[in-house]
Image 1 (cartoon, rainbow, N blue to C red):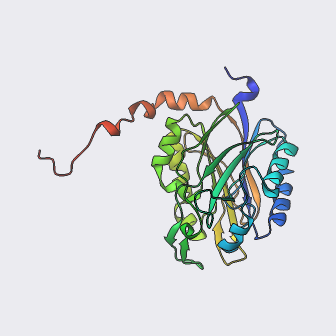
Image 2 (image 1 turned 30 degrees about the vertical axis):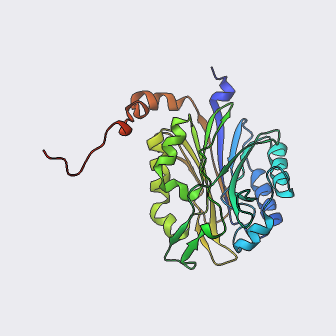
Image 3 (image 1 turned 90 degrees about the vertical axis):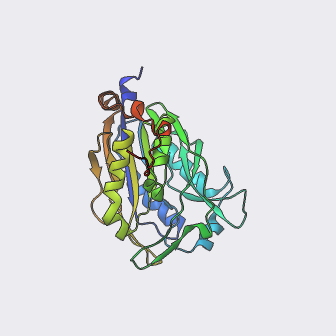
Amino acid sequence: MMSQTQQQVQLTALQLTSSPDPQDNLQQIERLLQQLPAHRPQLVVLPEACLCFGTNDKRQRALAELPGVGPLQQALADLAKRHQIWLVAGTMPMIDERDAAKFSAASLVFTPNGDCIARYNKIHLFDVTVADNTKQYRESAWTQAGDTVVTVPTEFGVLGMAVCYDVRFPELFRALRVAGADILVLPSAFTKVTGAAHWHVLTRARAIEQQCFLVAAAQVGDHANGRQTYGHALIIDGWGRILAESEQPQPGLATALVDMTSLASIRHDIPVAEHFNWSQKVIHANTKR
């Protein structure tokens, strides 16, 4: 049985315009964290590539750290401890044990004590063509795809880990719900073009389908290498309602105090988890009637 404190949690998604300089980005994050509401517990999600963005992949690889070792991870741990928050540290480059030439896009979870208790490596890599300044995105050239679904228990609910392009793959989010997720966390750097077309539709759909809160952090604006990102950091509830949104094209935050018990009634009234049985039914297009 949750206590009153545990029933309520402050959910916050940061919106950044990250540069190639990790120290500048850490200062930007610190300024925004100083604006957080006082409520505890609090979950804060940083965007994808929060500490280094708008540069080439060689620079990312040069900054990559081994798990549990390095100044960038220590700086993130210090932020979590200093502000007494649960911190999902967007993604940062981690040295990949399988291919030394590549790095993993790792999303790290820190407790209010500054302990890193979980790591999710982005599974779906952004190899696409977009009608923007960059045009060709080939994330797999330097990034090693993850292969593990990750959930993280906390005192206020279970986190389900995903990153940016993952949002287009509902199978991952179904797996997270099956594994017990209550809050889906989505560090992102959606392009301006794809964001304007699909960001709100996809994030709301994932929250509705899985009957989970969704915390979607975002990069925004024009970056050093010409990339343009959409922004609109979001907090969405299990009914698909947008509880908070960072609508301005500049760094900021979206934050909402939520009652975790609200998920129970949504899941009771429309028990999609109980009705999910596609694996037992195969529909053939050529079935004769």
